Image (cartoon, rainbow, N blue to C red; front, side, top):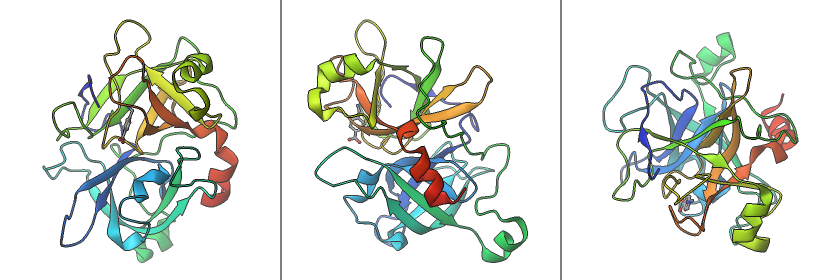
Amino acid sequence: IIGGENSLRGGWPWQAAVRLRGSQADGRLVCGATLISSCWILTSAHCFKRYGNSTGLYKVRVGDYHSLVPEEYEEEYAVEKIVLHPRYHADSNDYDLALLRVSGHRAHRGVTGQCVTLSRSVLPACLPVRREKVPKGIANCYITGWGDTGRAYSKTLQQASISVLSKRQCEQRYSEQFTNRMLCAGSSHDAQRVDSCRGDSGGPLVCERPSGSWVVYGVTSWGHACRLQEAPGVYTKVSAFVPWIKKVIGQ
Ligand code: 4AZ
């Protein structure tokens, strides 16, 4: 996140991270992600372009704030399944969405039906309803992640307040590369001060509903650069995928 600030510990309890597992680069950040139920996290499909989509390469960390300091609610889980959106192709940014099923301890799941142990600091975000629009004007929206701050990846989870821009503004900048499966977001006025960047991909763009619930409207996906006023960050529009997500996660 560029132009953000330290979040509060436990402040974004659905924030997850996909990290490498194994002897070589154990723990290296691959992408951000969002917990959407006890067993499923939402991330972007392009996260699996570099290392491939075999489950054994990855683990999911939840409840984290400082990436190098073990914390009370932090836990890691193996990945049981990686489901890329069937219309995603590695040569395009369209349909940039993936679902990961995390594997809990089977005995534990047998009793509770849970995979990830939910707590005050580990909770799923709400999904939008099908075709739900980001509430205009009043929306309190944030992007979060451990990605590039302009100098280096962040050790602490960063947050930045951001505005979802109109379709017309996004199309003006990205023309036909911008599709109905995307949102774009930036600062609403003046020079752009905040943006997502490398390492934030896959993570959430959440907004608060008037009722106080937090909804994952976007998944950090791509952009022509970071923090260019003319190049707002592009996010996968979650509300366009609600039937697919529900079908995969089975509810
Ligand atoms: C990336 O490389 C990336 N400013 C993520 C977000 C944006 C650009 C690039 C948007 O993962």
